[in-house]
Image (cartoon, rainbow, N blue to C red; front, side, top):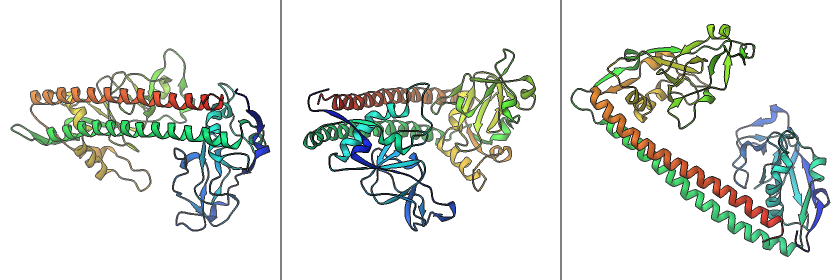
Length: 387
């Protein structure tokens, strides 16, 4: 570390306030009392986001400008309070003294986050006030802190601007694909018909053996247990699963086979996936099987994922709290069906454009990884005294 740097404990330079949650009966969503934050859920990139909960019982208060640290899983992420707020057990507030620039401490805590969270095999479930006070930070005189902050601010602002452009490019690519898919499905011509989904395939619902823990197995004769997590957000197929269940559990579930479709029937309802393996599925899925020979598999995939079909799922989804689809509702969804040769042409065109969109997504992911690496490099240089 460069000359002039020294180490001190946060407790020697800052006041640390542990959060304390008010009684639940004092919470409200109408803006009465102080904004209330329980944990990291409402953290933004740097500043805490707009509140969604308030409390009329004040427990522990963070002032505008205080650094907020998540003290329960995950441990270590930081944000800055933009107003006076009430903080719950999942947060602590760190209030800087006159020797420490707030932004300098924020950047350093960001840099220390992996250390605060712990290394592999030693992750803290929580961190308390005494542990935060005992954290060692590197400091220099206040003018030097402010110089380092100016450099980091410029660097982070540039990274953020680059990410905004990357986000926009990815959004535009996805919008172009969806616009194209919607337009070709809307161009009805000779031989096109519209059929209810329940008329062109069998629809069934998955089943969950309970309690599932009882039926999970590592045995070689176990049967694939296919979960929502086995389907990627941008993937078309489900190839494998990491868990298996016993044959007894499989008897209480429902089997799917290579070529069957799965539709999520809650949360991201209507999202289609094509099976490329066999196994059992739980009741979060609807299963489409034995679809008519006059229906191309790839065409059906792109039709099911189109905006017009999703809007039908959206209108039909039932449930006041968690909206979901059942067999009857899904059976009513209308699918546009052109002649088989036209289906294949449409599927090929969609496949090509989808592939290009996925390539852009991969470029976007690599760019985001590079930007994150640049952030860490800047922080490393800053607190190694090399800026």
